[in-house]
Image (cartoon, rainbow over all chains, first blue to last red; front, side, top):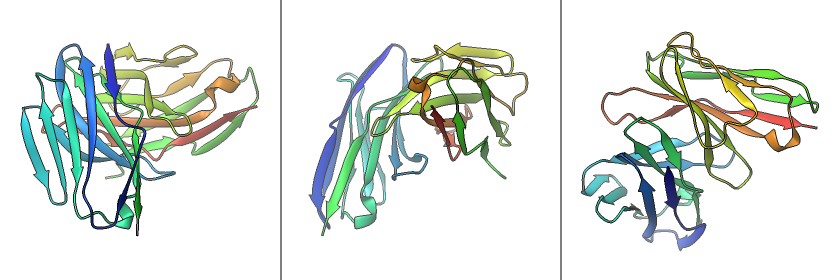
Length: 109
Length: 113
């Protein structure tokens, strides 16, 4: 099975940096994903890690440590439009993809 | 490409009724998934499929059934609807190439009264 934990809520100021942590336990790990979901919309893909290390895509970066079962999503230069829910998801070798409960990020002016 | 298409977008059911949520994708993806999302919560996996003719249970399969007779279609059947099945349902698909990221449909909002 898969157990995925992430904080429920985070608040930050426009222009700041926020780091969302995610811990996971999964049998047969085969990738860690981050998705963004605005209220009333479907999730959209942000990042993918399968090897240890940092993946950077513009203002968003994601880090993975397989030995620790740990990932984080780093959002830099926060903008108001970044207010959303951020979902951590772990995939197992049988392509079962399970999501955490999501972290609601509120960006304040 | 249309991507992942779900129908209907909204539906109200009475307790005990049955219905099918349709999902089709035109990206030739092997993997397809059904999730439900309750208000303020994350996505819970109901069923998934790794190819035509193959389906597997996810975390919350009770009260649902699926079939995968073609690569394109992955319908979700609700038998004997219950208020606990009031939720937003998302269908998604992915390939085994590149990152295998999920492509989601727009969601189907189901209310059981």
